Length: 328
Image (cartoon, rainbow, N blue to C red; front, side):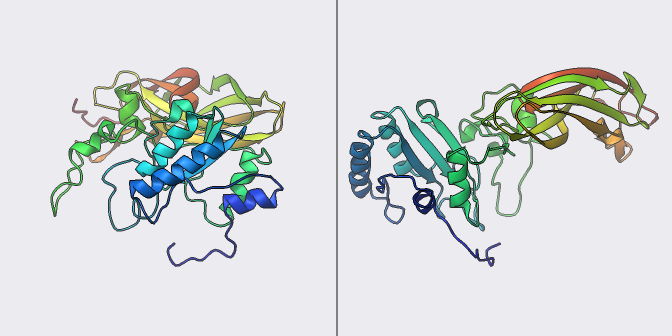
């Protein structure tokens, strides 16, 4: 990707101007100079300006020196100048909105004081135009977090063993990576895996399983209705998680086994279907070096995120494999 050049580059500032939005711009920090003396002056000017406007838009995030290929991040903070700017702006204006550009999750110590956060990650070509379309409501956001946003780095289990020694890294977290860990131990997070807001609302209903009991050689289908109950067209990403109710093998409390992204006009309802095979209920059994299902009940969880479960039902799956299961 480093050798790919955009044919058109747009910034939020230029895209706002192209959209006919009247605004006043000032730099609240200097990426090339992180000296507090210079940034304090820029921050003071931005705060004074913010006192006279109804709406404040801050573009912040991670510069190249904080994340890039070839080295690992040692923390999940944004530059101090960004956090201080947002904090001081919220003290003089109650309508501060933040656009974040970064390649991974960050701490947000100011999250409770801002009006909104739009995470653009690293948008690439014409990302400024796309950002402004979302801010102005010309487009409806539908993205979901593909990672858990931890409250602080120390909450992430891999930090106890990473980066390791010069030649060795031990992945002691095992299966408990990301949401599998945070949800199993019910740890508080900033944003859960699969989270994302929209300018409309979606309701889930009528979850139906093709059978309440199957063997691991059969396919289970799960169908449900999703309705756009707002007044704006939009897309929703419906997620299906599976929970092994009583496993003798140590397992995460839930695992993503399917998702569907659907477009719904305002007031429209659609029925969607998930198909689950043996692997949806299996674990890797080292005793037989193969994927195996342990007979028992499995919860089918339908959610708008890993922590926003809207519907659930239970299926009994019977194993046809006679291989030994060694409890953990």
